[in-house]
Image 1 (cartoon, rainbow, N blue to C red):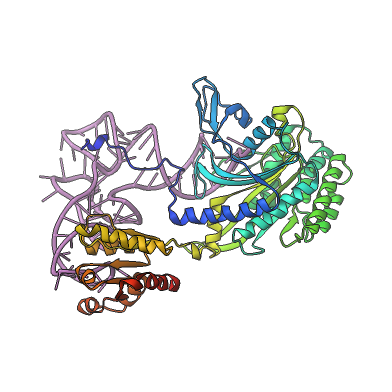
Image 2 (cartoon, helix red, strand yellow):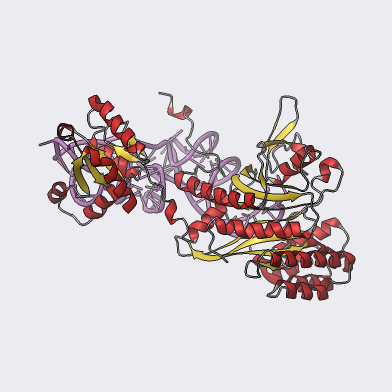
Length: 489
RNA sequence: GCCGCCCUAGCUCAGUUGGUUAGAGCGCCAGAUUGUGGCUCUGGAGGUCUCCCGUUCGAUCCGGGAGGGCGGUACCA
């Protein structure tokens, strides 16, 4: 035995979670359903490695001083920095650039897998999480955006979200760019400041955003956030723009034309939105599934045109009775410059990604995971260490009819074995001792039924006498009896 | 990253105005119960009171630092 002070503490690194059967099964179901939809739309699966060379991942280049800023990075034996991918878009851009010659173009692929971010974890925010992503590389058509949106709607519903509980909000960066150009904002840093301010609209409201568009904002904790430095008139124009969303897509687009029309870039964005609207309508996606919302901007720099965000409309209460709004569950947009980083050639691309465990949490809140309670196998009680061969034969017989089964392999007595079966959430325990062996019978205990019956019995002697949920029958009838128990459950 | 609050058993928390053996409930293990998960009773295991340094005759308690957690804020490719 090692000295206690030398023993490692059994704990997972912060921001990394262990997921047990219930969560694993739920996420697998989501991925299977969404993959099915994506493949039906002609998107092929693609898997790339967890590591990329750091320079391929984008602007956060690890340097010797701060190699792990934002990403988990390490140096290969040839001294090159490599880093765990932080999303699935950057690896796609790298893959597309590397294989561009031989790929069918436009290239349509979906991917899912873990991504890693080296940043402060929070509630519902981890340093490792699973993303699912679909992109079209090599098509500048607005229809490519529309198709991604329509497919996302269908994918989320296939995963189990109740129809209409998610809404895709669509906007176009070119509108805001046109607006800012008209207001005399040309500097990139200031543009980014405007985007970030607008991105906080849902949290801070118009008044908070007005401060951030101007000089800056002092929050409750006393921290000051520097604003984008717009003059009052320009700030009001931006706010008016973000508030221009109305019901229907076409109506919103018409209204936006009044606000941003006239600038070349703004008109381009309007034309793209109109084309997306037309394609969505043709694809059968109505305004109850996807709307145009000018307040959606997404904080990321690399989007060049259409941007979209999937918002959950579900509102539920958590275990403390607090109201919980799920909010954004995924997003995406058009990024026409990402592949060009490698090839030097502008390659239009658009995509959508969502967090798989976040969607799983949403489904749970929506009460859509009832069926995912994970059952254990039928447990064959190991009564007598000398009769293991008999128990294995029983278990094999049960498996042969398609029911998961296992023989208890611990050392404990029968009481502990029953407890084990209970904890495994086994539907039934199979008990074969001396009596049953001699009589050619098996005793089967329906654990769910037993639990229910036992709750009504308070007297111990009576409980022992009743053996609730238990039946003894000929061995030949074992499989069909178990089948009945499973079907009833 | 910045600001605030917090850290005592596996979990939720008492407690010591600085004093010798730190508690409860739940959970866990076992027995009562020839071969039965529940109930009841009995017993048991489990803690360097987050860590390090300082003050003190003496620190889980006071001071400083570190780590971790929670909330806000920033960032989020």
